[in-house]
Length: 204
Image (tube, rainbow, N blue to C red; front, side, top):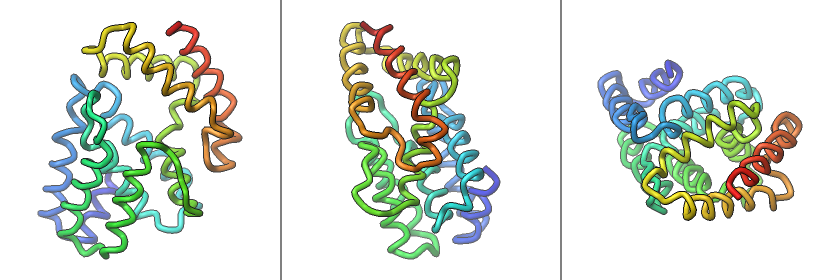
């Protein structure tokens, strides 16, 4: 979190950096509505960012993409990523970041909707892998994550939720690799597939 604050101050000033952080906190601190998509998820991605920073070509862009990528999250909406990308563009356009950098952040955030990378941008590969790392965590951590996602969709009847959730999970299983980078494939791929299969069995 401190690295994000320092980065924002380096491209604006203390006052504006505090305004951006307050904007982010307004959404990510709402753990009642967002038991998973909150600061805990963002901090997990920050931790992975720190671990793998040496592999990133433009770490500042990745860090800001992490910070904004789930800022707008309404479980029943289909345009959360677009809205989050637009908020990032709005706030960051008032900083010293280049137009090209802001556009890259915008595109990175949009990519978290499908978790597809149609470019050769390895930084985006890492961002997407950071976002999905939870799938390959321990069974206990995964089950806690799955329960939090269910809580976010608590307005949806169980049968309808189960059908929709299984469709999403089967998309991951159909991928040649869930993770884009060799590092994450080696560390998380096997466990992610086992976790996903176990959740599908539970939903059946």
